Image 1 (cartoon, rainbow over the protein chains, first blue to last red):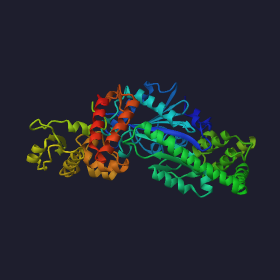
Image 2: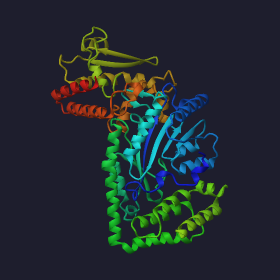
Image 3: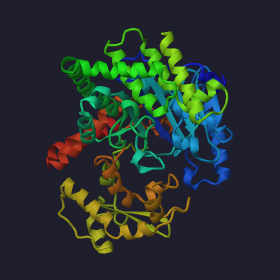
Image 4: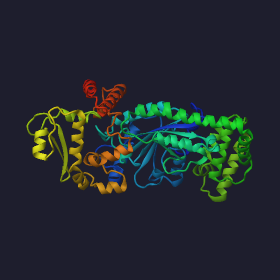
Length: 351
Length: 179
């Protein structure tokens, strides 16, 4: 498997077919682990960092975590490739931009990725389409067990799994769901969700995690406490309390729009579709904004001739690195915006 | 292997370093970057460390209070000046960077980290999740671990509510479940 294979299709998690996928785009479980006997990365010398990377890479490739596993050496990878992996949520922005020996292992379906030498020695993640947190936890737990048979993870009876940042210590687990909440944004009730999330000690972030903006009405909601609760408890709180509550808010807002503001709703949706089908220059932020409204229209049955998979795919493929990979060269400015507009027109008018 | 959350139960069963009677005062001092643990009975603690003696049957919460006080007195100065012998991390560096330097820092800076952890983790101070097989996690299925987690929580509640009879029962249940 090569990195270029990734650009030709959407990752499994973006198929848009998982449970409750009209609102829950994806479910993610991440585990932070460090190898005992080695300093955390901020105190590693260049040599130690390289030794660690080799040791962990060999352990991952030896553990047969998936039928085919791709390992990308990020130190040598070109910028566009690193950006591509960020756009597919396979690595974090800091991992793409940092320096020194580091990499990522990716399963063929892209549902599993393991960052090596990010903030911690290992950051394992399982990403699934729709609401599938329990399944994601089961899969990641199994991978963690496999890796544990060759790697001795730093662990303390009181503190649990030891992480570079004490905010991740204990289970080292970060459970998150990517939610599409356009109706709550349109009805101006999105603040209610933020407040409720804060009360439940959850973080709400943008499309690409920490420090990113909530573009296209996508919100990533995740747990903040990792100590003092078991992994199952954290997951069941999420699945049983958090997700249903936010989904209910969004459904309510969608019903309100449909019943009381039908014309305004349709105007938003079809105005977005009109622009997407006709525009000649499209900036990435505007694309996200318009696709969000189109996605709402498709999911609510207002737009009938476009498949949700087409919309999901457009979200992914219109991002800068994906466009450049598709075209096969570095483009920017109006050339990139023109290429984006053309790609969207082609996909939506062919539908 | 000690399981998470059971640290204080073990403390309660420790013998005094001095006279071998039940140790009720537990101190951790950092001397020249090395962690030195002391476990003393009330009498020896009073003589050696100047910690006031309690009654013969000290309630659990008072034991805990003594434990916390014994830790916070004096120890704070010492850990703040400590430098990790493994990675060279000092507390002021951590305060500035927010990241620890190696796995040993957690034990070295335990006193200073505890209030930070409580703030970050909704008051929690002990791990209740998965334990790696090679760290004694084998043979403890996740289900039983969850039961233990529940028991420990109930124990914490019982202590907070000063229901010592129930606390003692729960403590025994935890002991049985862990053995």
